[in-house]
Image (tube, rainbow, N blue to C red; front, side, top):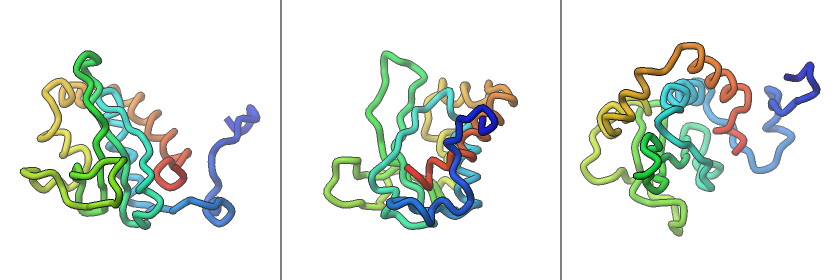
Amino acid sequence: MREAACDFFPDFDAHNHIDGSCPKEWVAERHTYHAMAFLSRAYNFQWSRWNISAGSRNIVMQIREAVDRKREAKFQLLHATPQRATILICNELSQELNLEPLAGLQFYPDLFTLNMSYGSVDARRAAFSMKYKLVETVFSMLQELKLCSYS
C-alpha cells in the first residue's frame, strides 16, 4: 500500500513523534491482534478512551458481539494483559477506570478463550469457521496499523 501512496502505517519509532500514543508491549499486542483476527466475524471492536492511560502492559478496548444483528448488545470494556483478558464492570462513560472484572467471570488467559466460554454459540461457531487467509489478512492489517498503540 505504501507503493500505491497510501501510507497510513506507523513506523517503528512513531510513538516518539505522535502525542497521545501509548506503545503497548509488543508480544501482548501481537497476541491480541491474532485473537481479534480470529473473532473479527463475530465481534465488533472499538477504541476506548481508557487505553492511552492504561500503560504499556494493558490494552483496553470496547467489544460487542455482532453475530446476530437483531440482538446486538451494547459495547463493553475489555481489558487484556499478557496474563489475562476480562470484561470490566465499568463502561466508557464511567468517571474513572475500574479494572474489576464482571461478577462471575472466570479466569481467561486471552481474548480467544474468553470467547469460548463467555461468547454465544454462534460467536464460537463463527470463530472456528474463519478461513486461514482471512485471519492472516486481518491480523496483518491490525499489526501494521497498531490500533492498540495509536488509538
